Image (tube, rainbow, N blue to C red; front, side, top):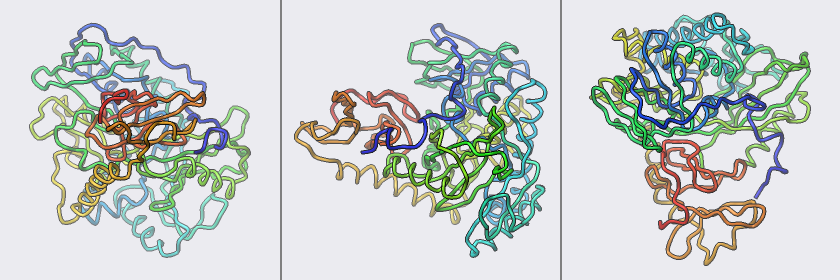
Length: 511
C-alpha cells in the first residue's frame, strides 16, 4: 500500500494551501430567519448572498468550514462550455433547451465577473478561451457537431485543429470569452459581503433533520434548531433526499496534480477532453511570474481501485507532455453526474413549497453553483427565470433515452451493495492490516473498516455506510473511507467528511 512518500507533491489543494480560514462559531442557540441554507460551498454561498441582496434574513449552516469542501478542490473554470453538452442537449431535448443552458451558464459567468468588480475581489479572474479537444481523429465529427450546436445556442464557438497545447490534436471546439479564477478568494469575499448585508454563517454545524412546513425547521447535532420560511439544501450531494435524487446521481472522484511552469509554456486557455482518459488543463498565476499548471483526470467511482496508482499515472502524463518542474500539489475533487447531464436545481420534491435543492453539477460547479443561487433566489421571490424548467428536479426523465443510464447506474450500486459483502476480506484478527494501510475485514461475526496508523495503533469502525448501508472501501492516497454507492466519505475514526451521510461510522460497532 502506498504512503505519502510514494506520491507526488504536497497532498493539499493549491487553493486551500496557506488559506486564512474563517472561524465562524457553531450554532448553539435556536434561530429564526427568512432563508436557511445548508452548505457553505459556492452554491450555498451564492444562494445566501443573492437572498441577502434581496433584503432577506439569511443563515448559512456548514458542517465544516465554508469553501473547504468540493468548491475548495475544484479546478475553478468559469465557463459555459461543458465538453460536448450542446449537441447532446439539442439532440435529446431540442434547440431551445440548448439555448437556455447556454444563456443560464453565461449569465452565471457574467454574474461572477460583475461581482468581482463590484466587491473589488482579488481572485485572479482571467478571461480566456475554453477548449474541448480530442487526439482521436474518429472524434472529429462529434467535435464539429458540438461547435455547430454551441454556436447555434448562442456561444462564440468554432471548430479548430489548432490549440496552445504542446501536442497535436485531431480537433477541438473553442469558445471565446470564458474565465478562470481563484475559487477560495472569490467565495471568502462573497461571504464577507454576505455578513455586511446582515447574513449569518455558522460553521462546524451539521444539520441532521429537516421538517418541512410554513415555516420549516432544521435540527443540528448540537440540538439547536433553525426555523425558516425557505430552506435550501446545497450540500453537493443532498443530505435530505425526499425525491430519491440519489437514483439520478452518480458520484465521481477526480484527481489533480499541479506544478510550476515558465510563463512561456502556458497554453493560454482552459482545455479538456471527454470520456475515458479525460484530461483537463489550465494554469494559474504564481507570485514570481511563473504559472501553476493544473492537470485533472483519472476519474473513478469513490471506493474503487487504487487512488495512489491513479495519482502516479496522472503525474506521469503531466510531466510527459509539459515542461513542468517538480510537482508541487496533488488533491482530489468529487462531482455528481446526473443521468441526463443537466443539474438538478429547484424544489426539493413534487410537493415542496419552500424547500429547494441544488445538486448534480457534473464537474461544472463554478457556473453551476452561481446559476443555482440566482435561480433559487428568484424562485423564492416568485419570479422563476426562463430556464427554471430546464433544471427543475421534478422534471420527468425521457424514459426511452435516459432509462438505460439510470438502470445501469442502479445496477452498479446494487453490485456494490451485495457483491462487496461477499468480497470482504476474512481475517481471524486485525493483525493482517499493516501500518499505514486500511482494509475491510470480517472478524468476530462483524464487518469492520480497519486502519492501522504508522505507530501500529488500529482504528476500527463499522464498515457499513450510515447513509444506506453499503460497505465502505479504503482510499490509499487520501487515507479515508469511501462509499462506492453514493460517495459518502469518512475519516479513519469514522467522522463524516462528505455526505450524503450525516452520521459517523460506529466505532467497532456490530455490522
